[in-house]
Image 1 (cartoon, protein in one colour):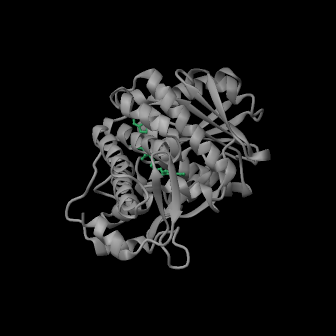
Image 2: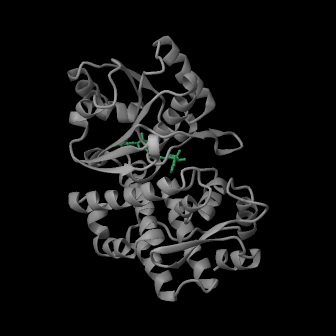
Length: 358
Ligand SMILES: NC(=O)c1ccc[n+]([C@@H]2O[C@H](COP(=O)([O-])OP(=O)(O)OC[C@H]3O[C@@H](n4cnc5c(N)ncnc54)[C@H](O)[C@@H]3O)[C@@H](O)[C@H]2O)c1
């Protein structure tokens, strides 16, 4: 079992990854906790597939696992469901030492993390991400949240897990469209930080999509390293961590304008990355060749690169509602070339409109 460390002083934690991790989950879990009780939060889809493996491995090590299920879907990542989780934890007499285990994708991870941050002013939690997107992105970095009717992730906390366990075998049951959402984030890491990794992805994209074990392990490892490094240097997104939002500024606007129904998060990010690359080209920051490499890699992954019927003005209006707007200025993450990005707050609405209408 390989591992990477997220360096955050006393809040540092390991990310374990490899094949067959769930089978021996209890053994490693025991290094962190001696409290007998542990609560596994999952949903019916993931629970049916993987709960038993986690439960058995915990029981083998003498733990007393309890299961809490949340229905499957983004619409349950709410305060109402967080509150139901609190009710169940109180009924189980969970105390400050009782660890919560988030077994599922980003929805389960974000909701469980938020509840862990707030129940009894904070209980320990472990991330066991089972989607590619949550393995390379949402399970690392301590952003936890629930949605509000007025917007996504509006209520939340920075709260780091004690460890992350990534079992690549869980991806075998994940629908192809969900795999691609994770691939979009993986491509993002190459663009923002590592041109060699981007080139590796250009050579291996087919294998990655088809879950070739070596390519998957390398891609997950490199992605987690890049995310862990950004988080270690800027835990609360005061500066550097914002580079992880490449493609997300316009991506979020697209998701919000389509009511989160038309595109999955990773698909909206893929389209957002194409527009961000185009904006970089039009601002004179990157070459046409780099722009085309980004578009071609996203396209060859089978991800969308544009949307039809797009209303540029509505997108621009929506950009101003983003949590990351500072002093009325939209902050774009733009690329200087493959492997390097910068934060730009001086892009005019005219240029943005031109790019969105391209
Ligand atoms: N905290 C962060 O830093 C961060 C970053 C990115 C995204 N997010 C959040 O993550 C969420 C999206 O996460 P997601 O893309 O993992 O979606 P998700 O959690 O909704 O999972 C997608 C679907 O796959 C199913 N599933 C999960 N694992 C499976 C498996 N191994 N086999 C079969 N089916 C499986 C789920 O039940 C669900 O139906 C959003 O709420 C987003 O806001 C958070």
